Image 1 (tube, one colour):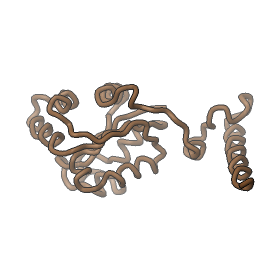
Image 2 (image 1 turned 90 degrees about the vertical axis):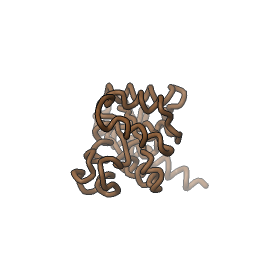
Image 3 (image 1 turned 120 degrees about the vertical axis):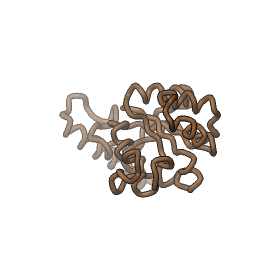
Image 4 (image 1 turned 180 degrees about the horizontal axis):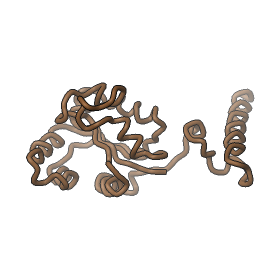
Length: 184
């Protein structure tokens, strides 16, 4: 599974959009494996946005990201980077597609609510910058088999075909839940 970094920027926090943004990502099947709220200091901001140093928007960007708390999270899932970026929408909210976070909630490029890593290398670098290994977790959710056709590990015979494995896993999980609830 792929992991990526997501930052709900100061405008998203101040406007009370943490819940709707997290919900959109989870509804796409992404799983939160790390989450924290913090006030970004100048040093962390400069390191995160080092790629933009020397550009005209660099100083205002640092002032903005350090102006109020942010929510930083690591999400995991199949094609997490692409799914996150498509869910966020294009950087400029005016160009973002309908139904994306930026198109639905943001008005201008300077206040576009969220950041998401743009590739695997960037994701690895950004995750390491914002989170220690101890702050990240791995777990399975009951709905994982319904999000991806990859069966949960250990729920079906290894010799089963992919389709049979998914069916077996779904049936086994449903049967187990039924038996558990009917025995109460």
